[in-house]
Length: 439
Ligand SMILES: *Cc1c(COP(=O)(O)O)cnc(C)c1O
Image 1 (cartoon, rainbow, N blue to C red):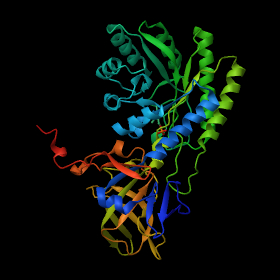
Image 2: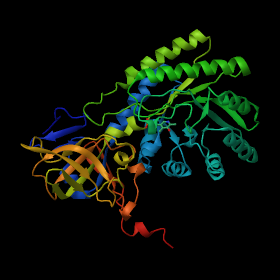
Image 3: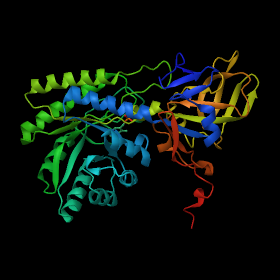
Image 4: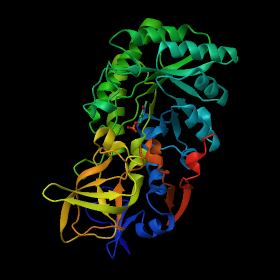
């Protein structure tokens, strides 16, 4: 029998009677034996549950016209887009590669929003000819390019304009994008937001649908969304007053935080959405405008805690009086986030629930790079050794999608767990795959 282990950071984790770690009720050692390590696992039922939670919450708080767009840069592979299609989720895409993957999954691209601060002409042509429903336009140069390419094809392209509301979400600087000096969007403060709105309204092959903002990632404070929504609604009102344009849509971005470690809270999504909705309704009323159809763009909080990565321990190195390194068979090639942002993670031994004696160690990867660290100060059994399995939790977002072949390491496979079964969604790369592009 599987019991929910106490003090787990997500409820889809548990331990068997013998103390072995499980995900979605499935013991991890057997999965490691069948598929090898490193191994990305996803609890498909958890992903579906998160989609339903978001969709239910936005519809009940904002009404039927509200949308949830899965920010697919968090995790992008064909099977995931099939799940998004089945769950009735919209999607954000940021490149021709993501569009191609969504197409391959039979995803209806009419429900796709195309982001990016630098869409090439080729991207724009590909997106328009693939029938991407809406572009989220970052800047004027892009707007001219879309207008030209859409006109050549006799089309009018629907667009939202990405606006920078000037909100610092007090999160990691590297992932904060709502500030005025951000590389993304047009700032209200500098007057560029107003100018791009006027331009969009004047171009014949552009159909302006409204505005977008995204203030950052791993945000726990709902005040951030309320302040951003206030600024954006004021902007909607200003554009109505100035140009007679009342935005039909307002996309307030993604960024809800997830729990990587115990000290981080668990966000109650329906409650948060209800709070923001209540504020937006009141504020729109105060401004005397109809509330636009609201969209949210969660990435991380749809997939992060549905995933974990399994590794096998190799070398354990004790530098007496200094440090202990526990090396695993993956590293920054499958998880660059500690190297990039110093992101916290919970790493647990798979087969030992309560080791009698632990030691604080650095869990490191196998890449030739001193920064190849998965986490510092991890309490692991003092006698941990070669061959033992470790699980790094909450790796469903920005892991596979950020992975590389650094050091010519083949990427791990993705195995989906659903209703007590498991299946391969992405196979492990082979050594031959690593040379597939060499001519
Ligand atoms: C990255 C991103 C998101 C998703 O952010 P999460 O933190 O994964 O929820 C949403 N919208 C835009 C524009 C983004 O760049």
